[in-house]
Image 1 (cartoon, helix red, strand yellow):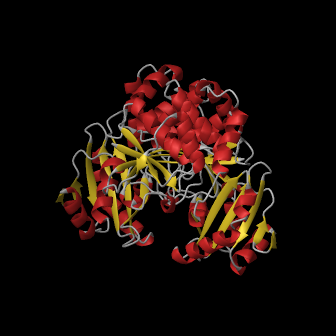
Image 2 (spheres, rainbow over the protein chains, first blue to last red; image 1 turned 180 degrees about the horizontal axis):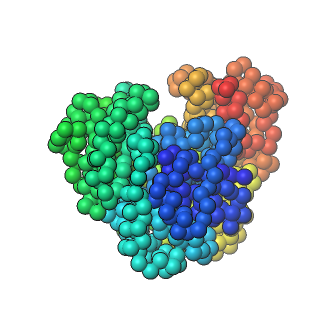
Image 3 (cartoon, each protein chain N blue to C red; image 1 turned 90 degrees about the vertical axis):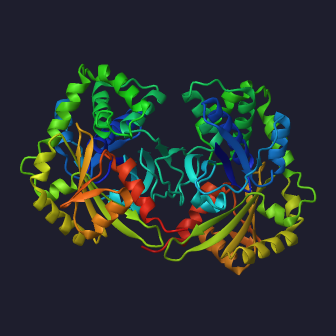
Length: 314
Length: 314
């Protein structure tokens, strides 16, 4: 059996890619089971409920040498705690390649597209397998989520073409209305504890190379209702302070992305983070909020700039 | 422009994969040029001559940030000297994943098949492009070379299917006769200097992880005429001794693979190598020759065993 899972603090792509890839492998005669590495966010819960499918089980502790397939991630900091002991036989991903190594030749499929779902659609086609309605709905939901319905600069023509192909197969007539319902579900944060809000879509990135290694935690809240998030600013800053100490980080950021207006205002914990945001992005900082303008993609607009800023001088 | 190249000490797959992938990218509208990272071996020279195609140029020193595509390798020790400064945007490979990282999401295509050529054939199909006769001949030659015409345990059904498809496109009626001609060309080593023989298909592997890092150099001579190689045993051992000192290695091996009889007899430099071969493989050693039986694949039968032998105890 091969265990298929996405990253920690799973988003819609991490969960649906695990489900879809496990189903695809099973159809191809590979015994595969989907797992998750954390709680569903409200958007993903909405997507699975609409699709009428159960969430995958939490990944149990796997024995050393167990075969696994990674989707939507490849760095150990975002994966199963004992990844280094596991046998990574397959990866389907659309992120930069991090610290992954394998003991045997693997199956790797990385493409610089907006969503793992877009690559999974290609794998169906290449396998000559018709796309089932459930898989179509899950892949389409992931693409809308990852690209913020094509608003993100990570969007490629292949992502747009995939949604155009998948919508009728999934039986979704009004893609715009479905995307807005997903984003509304994501924004309905209710009385979620501040630490949970911070860690909903939160990744730790190593910067500075071997010369000056240090890590930053970067959370993102994509919402159609940023006013709600800033109404809880004090609580969130306290949660960020705690995460910084607990995880031994050099910096913590929480970007609040206004999906509909395509803007990013980022909570700034201390003078350390403020200095970096001012110098790396030329961002204006007012109180403890930095204006990052239209930089709504952590992957494409935030992390690469920080990597350049922290890179050892050659 | 993107520079496409295979590994140092290029073999037929490293050279032909660079040529074929550069041609495929060009047909797809990507400005790509093939290069090589060393001299052609006799087999590859025969293949290119039969195909009527010039060898790619030697890779010039590329400026930092230059876009490159790697074929048939991914580890920095086997690549361009300044790989860490280059922008790796694409990799097509069938080896285990080593120390490669990327700054941006790349296009990666790894499959656990016997030859890069087998993957390149799939890329033609997925792009909807007909395979041209020259590309068919180059891919077929690489597959025959890497799999020793299906004798190697790295051979998969996909490699066999690829050759069956490619032979008529390439206009090669008798695949067995063509493979034997390739292997005869490879075995016609003439007065090649001993150091060149050692380094013809030679790779340096890091073992022991961060706990006890050290490197071994492992050369392979695949030949239909092993008697010729053992006739030059003293010279080869001297070349191995020099390589060990010069490259700061912990061990050096030279495996002489008898293609037709599918056996591996490996030259043993010192008591260090003898101890490891006896303990890791249970090999009998007579004089300075270890009998490694039918282990004819460095990738599948030699390196993984040494990795296990040298792995830090958990």
